[in-house]
Image (cartoon, rainbow, N blue to C red; front, side):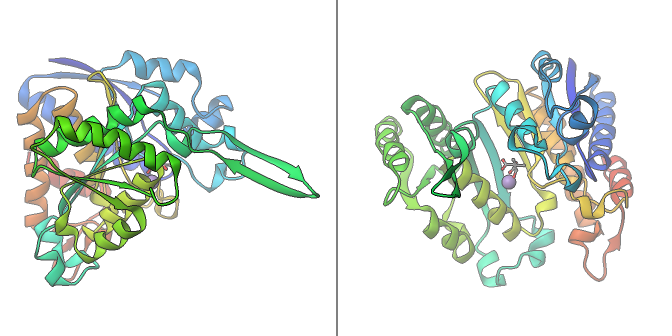
Length: 356
Ligand code: IPM
Ligand code: MN
């Protein structure tokens, strides 16, 4: 098959991981007889430097013309002082919205080889950690009205959190469908004791639950959920939640699996074109040192093959190579422990390529 992939190298340490992911994609293309071509897209800090805009329309268009988008991570101290609309992060939000990617899938799964890197007690980890956070990605407070104004001699800031029924229904359905393919347990996470949006979520989710009687459905307040994720993560199969709760809970979920450097994600809308990115940031503190872990980005590329290109065998092949590297005790600094071989980012790429 021929596929054109839009590639956003990203900022700070991000180009280092994207480079490794592309090497892996090239090796897979060769092994399975595919042709992957790459279109470079500027977004985030790089685009601010080049165009004074974190995502010019021309760059978004390249993504819309591609078969899918691979992204590292964007942002960094260099661009931090800019006004809200010019921030690097705004480019990412406009990309997600511009591509209509309402469904963000963030797996939290413990790699047995890294079980002792989890900050949780062994007795909790042994019960297993394998759940997915389905995060609504283009609604809620991220896309509501934002403003700062003066009142009675002081500044006041407002961020609103809108959700409409159809926005809730389409992500709720993804939650149920995802659960149906797994352990058939869905938890809707909200703050229905305080928020109108959460009460609307429950209303819509109840309607959907009637369509999915085979899925065990329940609701949980977000504060309780944050606690339950570290107390008893084995209880979760699929969590569906609004944008900001999903942002926060998915970071927590990744950390209990050992390292945020291991967690990929997919973002999809109604078509097959998706955006694939690690859930971690651009790691400015370690940029240029060749020590960042490329695995989350490589696994994101594998997710692209699986979900957007329907290349399951190819994705399995990448995931098996990552598994083998971990079995062989090869580790970047974030997952290293005594007795293992410590490697840099490029050497981790080499090690995965050697096992493909
Ligand atoms: C993420 C990030 C982004 C988000 C930021 C960079 C806007 O934290 O992908 O989780 O909050 O969605
Ligand atoms: Mn985040």
